[in-house]
Each structure stands twice: as structure tokens, then as C-alpha cells.
Amino acid sequence: MKDSGFIYYDDSKHPDSRFYLGAFIYSDKDLNDIISEYISICGLDPNKDEFKSRSRKDKHPEQVELRKYLKRLIGEIKIFVVISAPNENDFKISTKQALINLIENNISDLKTELNIFLDQGIFKNENDTEYKSLTDKIGSNNVRINIEQDSIKIKGIQLADLVAHSCSIMLKESLGLINKTIKAGENSGYDPETDIEIGFEMWAGIRYNFFSTPPPHPDEWESQLDCVAKVDKKGLYISDNCTDEIKIKGMERFGEMYLGCIH
Figure (cartoon, helix red, strand yellow):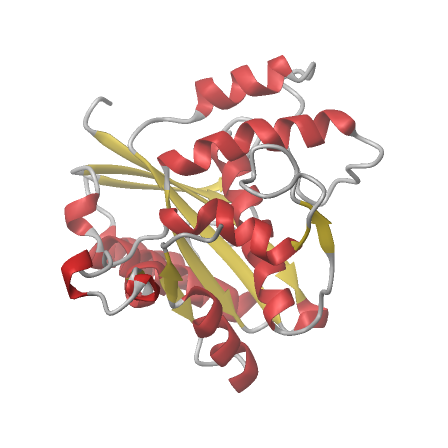
């Protein structure tokens, strides 16, 4: 599978905040072995344990350690975010259209053969009307879509879980629903004791890795503030059924990414 690319997908659902969010991550390599290694390093069993963003980190320090290791992989992937209204049907339809957009709008950045792994509970069987529509559009010998996947076995879904959770926190902060700060910590470029907003910390860790159109050449900048990658349809899908506020804040948060200096 040397010439194959891998797409993994998981969700982070927040009905009380009026949105569901999904994250596709793309990798040029199968992530199973490296994530299995990280799980083992953290003292867990990769055959039965996994990273879960929703787990209580204060009661599971090994999950905190595993999250640190998984963050190392973010620099090696590309991200596509899906935002839908907070219901299963709209999320399923949005997932379908977003995957089509991901492939069609980024074809030159993807390997010729694609192995796609979707978490459980989205397309529950192959007779699903939306699943059939999806396979009619992109399914082929070169594109293999695997539904109802177990994230313990398909470990790349665990990294998609981390990305989806991070993006959900970023969106909730943009909506004014979260106001939390954390210490900058070591190797952040800031004084380790500096308080920074949690959404900023998560944005700083993934901003370079969205499918996007690169910033203009530096000769074209008026200032460093013009060092902006356009994500738009290459790395973002927002359902028409979202509220106007979710659409606006989602586009503001993910529609483009500033890639200049933040220190």
C-alpha cells in the first residue's frame, strides 16, 4: 500500500451549543503502528485501550501523556473540518458532501489510492441512501470507503478524535461559550507561566495543517498579517442548516488561517 493515502474521520457533538463537528484527517501513511507504539509507551494496551478526548484527564494521567504524543503527529497530516446542525441526519449528509469536496478540491495533494475509515454511527450500513450516494460519487477501485470502524483497531480515528475535539473547543470559544485559560508551558515560545486562552493554544497547534490555498508570496505582503492561508472549500464544509451565528463564527474561525509569527 506504498502509494496509498489514508483518511480517518471522527466527530465531536455539541447539541447544547447548536452544532456537530467532524474532522477528516489525511495522512500519506497508515497511522496504526505509530499510534500503537505511543499507546504502549504510555503504559496502555493498544489492543484494548485508546485515546478518547471525552475521558476525564484528571483521573487518567496516561490519557494526558498519550495526547502529548498524538499531538506530534498533527504536523504530518492535513485537516478538513465539517460543521453541521445538531442532528444525525444533517451530520450524515454534511459528512458525505464534505468528503466529496475534500477529494475533488484537493486531488493534487492526495495519493492516487485512498483508504477511508469512518467512525461508528455515521453510515450504519451499506444500504444507507446517503452512503450509496457517496459511493456512487467517489467509490472506485482506487477509493475504498470503510464504514462503522472500531477506533481501537483503526487507530488513526483516535487522532481524528483529538482534532475534532480541539476544533470544537475553538468554535465554542468563538461563540463565547468557553472562557478558559491554561499555562503556556514549556517550549511554547512564551513564558511557561503565561496564561493563554485554550482556543488559542489549540489553534496554534493545528493552524499549519488545514487543506488550504497557501499564502501569497512575501513580496506581495503589505505586512506579515497577509501571511494567511485560505481554507474555505478546500478544508471546510458548513451545512446550510446551521444557524447564521454558527455559519459566521465557523467561517471566521476556520475559513482562513494566519500563518505568521505569533510570539
